Image 1 (cartoon, one colour):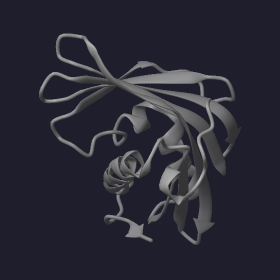
Image 2 (image 1 turned 45 degrees about the vertical axis):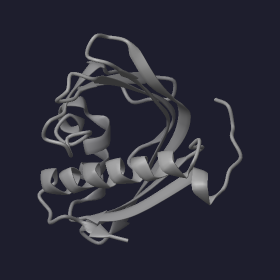
Image 3 (image 1 turned 120 degrees about the vertical axis):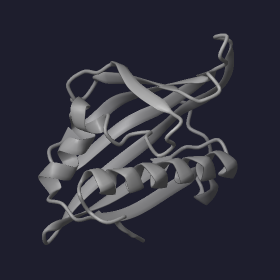
Length: 165
C-alpha cells in the first residue's frame, strides 16, 4: 500500500452507537449472512453480493461485487490485517468500477480501515477510522457511504437510526 501524506483531508473517523450488544455488532461485521444484510445496502438500486468470502482472520480476503441501476459494477476487496474478537478489525480496502460493458473506469488505491467496538452498557459504540485517501473528495464520498451503511446496520440490528457523533 502506497502511503500518501496523512492529514485531515485523507482521514475519516465516524463514531456511531448501536442499541445492540458488542458481540452482536461484531458478528454483523464478520459473518457473511449478516454482513450481506447491511453492507452497501444504503442505496436500494444497488445489488451487493459476495463473490469470495473467507474466515475473518489476518491475511484472509473478501471480495464483494455491487451492481448499480445503470449496470456499472464495483468490486470491493478487503484483506484483514488484525482481528481481535470482539474488539477490533483492521483491514485494507480497495475498489474498482467497471462500466456495464465491463470496461474498467476507475480504481481506488488501497486504503486502511480500523473498526473498534466499545461496550456502552447494553449498546455498542463503533469507531470507524478510514485513512490514506487520495484527497478530501474521496474521503467525503466514503463518509457518505459509511454513514449510509451504518444507517442500514442500525435498522438491521433492530435499533433506531443510531446515535451519530
